[in-house]
Length: 499
Image 1 (cartoon, rainbow, N blue to C red):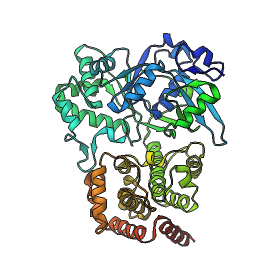
Image 2: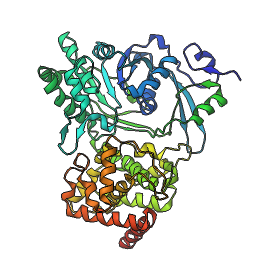
Image 3: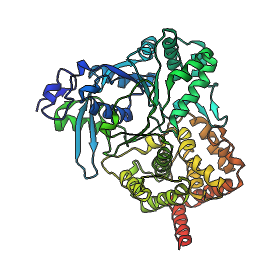
Image 4: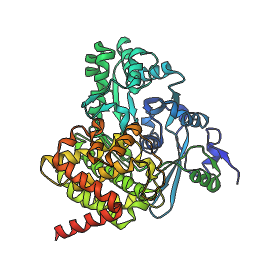
């Protein structure tokens, strides 16, 4: 079988082997700039948009993908070489795979190479939406101060050098300034990140920056830019070398960076687009007036569930999420956490069968074909835990409910932050606060509460005697008996109490 490098020239030959875009990509007009063209975007928004572009009436919604950071050099050069094309590999629960080529990314820019090109593209009147997957940490939110972190050196750079920014705030501010000065219309800033009320978050953080960087621009943004909230969901693990090789051996396609994902997908969007939007609802997205209940459910159950499995699984020496959830003691712990601590704080979820949703999460986590890496899930936990787990803690403390299991996860994270699993194997960790986490984790060996003193993560949580007691008990239990034995004891106690 002849091998074909994935690009426009070879697309016709590749179409004999897998599904490819049926629309003429040369006639697609770019209407979206997307910042953060990693795996999740390409399995989610770009996938939905690819399906949509088969409708000739929707040809104004091609995507310009922006690689914002120097870290993104590889994906930029990959997409450039492949004319924006990539392969999406959907791994089903039964082991089968659905493979297709996605064509919705029709332009691509590398910000560190030409910052003005990115600013000009964002300011282009054809661009109606600037969408983002910049990770939870990209929003520059300080949990302790409950606001924008102006101490960030990159933010300081952008304030001093507005024409050569390094953060999303610098780029968007300069592009909106150009729109205003040129008498152009505004646009929609659309977050696709795992943050509750993500539209409100990006609006608040952007305006905080603009008030300092370009104060006269604030009023124009308030009138001409919209920030819809959205809930996004599709498990997208890191692509492995085996995935790349399998694609080549099975279909003869040489794709330097295909994307692997699960079959499940969900996108719930607040219908608040100031200059028009794609008809994503025709390809499976859901537009609603209030996204918050859906966001809260997903972040508190799926994303928090991932963190629970990741942290506990890492200490036990597991490498993938499916390994962790197949441990019945860990899966029982997770289900108990979802039932007793998360469910009581979710409120009314009209149209959602919550028990079925929670059960489906265990099935999705257990997809042996996905092999979602635990070190990916645990990366940047200092940005994830305040969003996924701590809101549940605060809500339960407010109503005098249980925080025992959440406290156990935080205690396990403190021990994880020492850098080794229970077998003594060094953990692969990646976190913006890694040095501080490691320092506080070592101090916590003698005084567990020390770990809770990281205010940028925990705020004033150390002042709650209820939480501190549960956390300290869990910490001592894990150190003494290990994660699994401690989990078994918690599961047994909860089973006894439920009878």
